[in-house]
Length: 389
Image 1 (cartoon, helix red, strand yellow):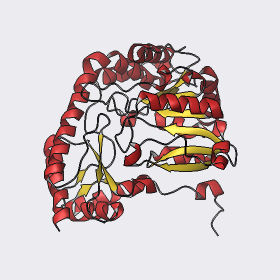
Image 2: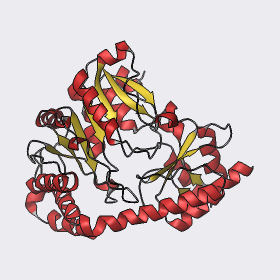
Image 3: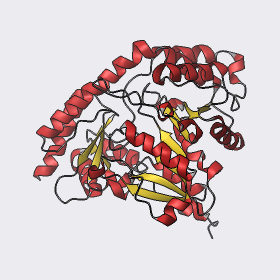
Image 4: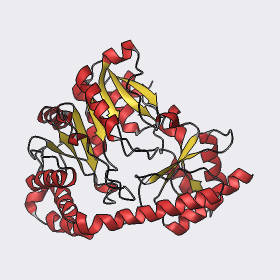
């Protein structure tokens, strides 16, 4: 007889990318040339300064001691200085910044500080699955709001039922958005801050794609807006901007009271980020001006090739202002899951079906700009064959 699982555990959905690596391995063993446009994990190098910073720091004995939640003071100070330079926001590095084992773990643990059974967290659908998973494991109630093209992929803040609005304790927003690649205007973000103040709601702002933006667009921080510090926590990651997905480094920024709550939760669950990785983060931030623009330009070049190639292959594609993704309507009446399955099995192309990120994503598939232009063109050509079959 199997041990009993908790109701929270049993409420977890399957993770969208869980079975893909094994399928890719099988196809590769059969001699299929697989092009992976699924996970947001680019085939690009991290900054040389970060690699050198890690190597130098890892050789120092003191870097191998427990980091605890304080972490490396120079990391906190570097993050605060970067936030001020980039967004014009003054942060206390010791009270309003918190190092994270990647932004995902902070986002997933935060509900443990704010949700009781019956409390609601508003979650974009489709959206990053850590939002929903963290809420379920904390015993809260996810309220999924479909992201629709007619709403510019924004969550309407004036359409909640009276019962739901009364119980909302957390609101998750992510702009530039994964997976839709949409951006939010400042007026919308101001309305979100106002909504959270009026309803005693924590605004969880996932800003992982703040720097992967094109054609002069500069995504704002939620913390730039008046009053946001009292209700909002903003999450940043080194994964996308610096191609450091496996390094597991990020940070949260926001009001001291909110930061303290997340830090207390983390104290009982983890012991902080390896100090040498934090030292590498300091080096990465210091290299921002000379390194990041070139990296973003590579994503912009891939975006342009992907848009052109997919359009030539018969797909309708909107040109995004930011992120490393395209959000593409599935042609015809086929489900996104069936189309993605055919793409992999018949053409060796990994794409992420919209349904895998929530029922609100049905009718779309996500393309990640994680391979070079030649491979993107090849992938688009193969995907086009599916529409002609």
